[in-house]
Structures are given as C-alpha cells and as structure tokens.
Image 1 (cartoon, rainbow, N blue to C red):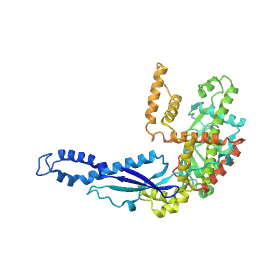
Image 2 (image 1 turned 180 degrees about the vertical axis):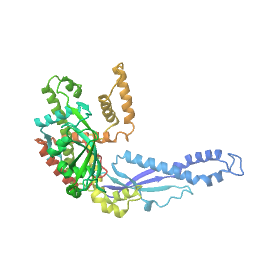
Image 3 (image 1 turned 180 degrees about the horizontal axis):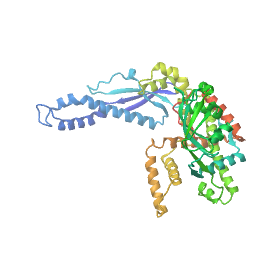
Image 4 (image 1 turned 90 degrees about the vertical axis):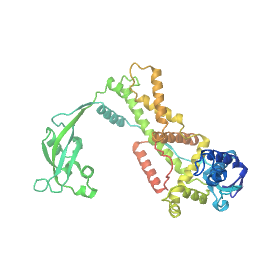
Length: 470
C-alpha cells in the first residue's frame, strides 16, 4: 500500500493510492475458504465444491470489497496523518483511474482530487459594530406589571357583559334590508371590548347576556385592519366593507387583576425573596432587560457575520466545490441550476462553513453533548414538580437521566443546538471585538433592526448555515 500526493495548486491536490495484490490477497483467500465451506452448489455436497468454481462465482466481488475497504481506510488515514484540512470530501478522478478490472486480481492505482480549506485572516480590529442595549423606561415596567397582574388574576365567565370583558360570538353580514346577506360574511368573533372604537357600539354591548343579539356597523366598531384579519378578507375588500353585522353573543370572560402584593411577588419570582413593590419593579425591569438583550445579541451577531462574509477575501476552489456539490445525491440539482444559484445560495454557505472552521480554531462554538445536557437539565429543573418526599440526590439523578436521554437524540434538541451555537458565537465575537455598548430606546432599536433586516433581504441567502436566533 502506497499513498502519495501531487499539488495541483495552492488549494487543490491529487492523492494517489496504490493497492498491491499482496495487500488484499490474504483476506480474499480467507473469505473464499469460508464461502466454500458454507456454499451449497448443485451437484456437490456442502463444502465440497471445487475452489475454482467458488473463485469464479465470488472472487471478483470479494476483491472489489476488500480493495475499496483498503482504499477508504488508507485515503482518510493519509488525510489525518498529514493533517490536511479539506473542503467537502475527496472526489475520484475517474479519467486517471480508469475502470478497475476486479475479475482479474492485480495491482490497482486510484486517483482522488482534494480541495484544501483556505486560510482566512479575520481582522477583528476593523469590525466597528456596536452592541446595543435597550433602555427600559418606567412606563414599560408599568405595562409589564399590568400584564402580570392580569396573567395571575382571577378568571370568571359572568352572565352579563362588563366594560372590560372579552366577548365572543357569531357575526353575520346583513344586507340593506336588515336581513342576512346571501353569500355574505359569517364568522366567529372574539374581541376585547377595549378594541371597540365607537363609544355607542361599545355601550350597546355592555349589559347584554348570552344568546342576545346586537346589530352594529363593523367598520365603525373595529376598522379595516381588524376586518381584514378576522373576517378573512383581502385588504382592499376590508377597506370597502361598510355593512352592518348581527352579532349573536355566545359568552364573555373577565379577568380581575391580581393585587400587587407579596403573594404575587412569590408567584412570579418564586426563587427570590421579594417583600416590597420597589424590589418587584426592579426584578420585572431585569426580566425586560434580559429579553431585550437577547434581541440585541441577535442583531450584533448578524451584523458581525455579514461583515465577515462581505470581507471574506480568501480565494476558493470553486470548480472543485461545484463538482463536489453535484456529486451528492440530489437528483433535482443540475449544473445549470447550480451555476444560476451559486452566488446567491451556495457560495455564501460555503464561505460561512470556512469561517465557522476558522472561528472554532479560536474557540469552540460547536455545542458539545455536555453543553446540551446542561441546558436540558436547567429547563427540567425550572419546570420540575417533584414529589415532596424525594431526596435532593434522587431528584438530581432523575433529572440527569432524563436530560441524557433527551440530549442523545439530536432531532429532539435541534433548536437547543442552534441556540447554544448562537450564544457561543456571540461570546466569541464579543471577546474578539470588545464592542462599544450603546444605549438606545426601544424605538431606536426597532429602526436599527428594520434597517438591518432590509440589508439582509438585499444580501445573498446564507442557506445551509446554522440558525443565529438566540
């Protein structure tokens, strides 16, 4: 067995693998003997067929299998031993290799084309991307606390509609004669009375009971956006919808907000000892900041990643990569389609694969099995409702086993893998760039995010990359 290589260019080489008959003859001979012992050939007792007949029947196949096994093992061993960082996988050079004749055992020579991973120099100092931090105004904390008091409030289904209730029922479109319109709208509606814009219409609903009916103009009550969404109409049709509707009340629901007291503090933050409203407001503010920080991380990572792609700089063995992509089992992909989508789809994905490999040399950003297990354990612990008589040790063991089982199937945890990958990518970018932190309002952040999304829409697709949503 002899493996050598010839450099074709800075990024491409040809690996030559020579398999001598002596490399596979012994194993083929052993397998033929086993075949002879087990073979049932008409006219001969089991195990007594002539070896010449066995060789004619099975030797070409056995030689091919043995040679291919040796070929694969030694090709990749050579790549590992030589520490070659390759793109894709080796491609057989069929023109040089020819068609091996396994029917007549001999010495064989195989040729493989290989592309090397280009070296990418990342100039971190040239990346001027700020890490945004959204300021949390007092009114946003007030709004969040209002939502919390409703979420933990008392739910009721009163018989009579009140001014803050949620109402549901069936709405049918009426014609000019006040009767149900043939082919008109007929939908189930569910809405808060606060959504009703017209004061008189709102008042006509207050005090009504189940099965009562109220006639009102839908456009005056809700406007075109509500009609478009809930009446399932096109935007133009919704703007022209001026008919009255007959609304048959099915029921209503009411939430009485929870008082802002220690009971609420304990329900919302069970692991924190909060005794007064000031500390509660501070904890709520921190939760908002945490959610905002996630969005800021997403924007930061996407901006840095786009910069790296835009300033990639390295030369790629495009002809080889197109051959490799076409060699994969995708029957719908043609050379013409690949060329048409190369710049927009395949090239950006290839660039990120190379960048990803370079980033992992700086610091591993690929989530490990232990990373996934720890993440799943944290989720399980936060949502665990263990038996009161369970010991801490037993609880830990139970959660560990469950986490290991869940994490063992990557299909179950693909979103977790993506999240961890994004987190690790963010931490790496932050360490290398040491970005300036800029505090902005939520409105300013929304404008920045919108502008970034528009840039992303104009940029080539980055299909094949791992998700960056945190």
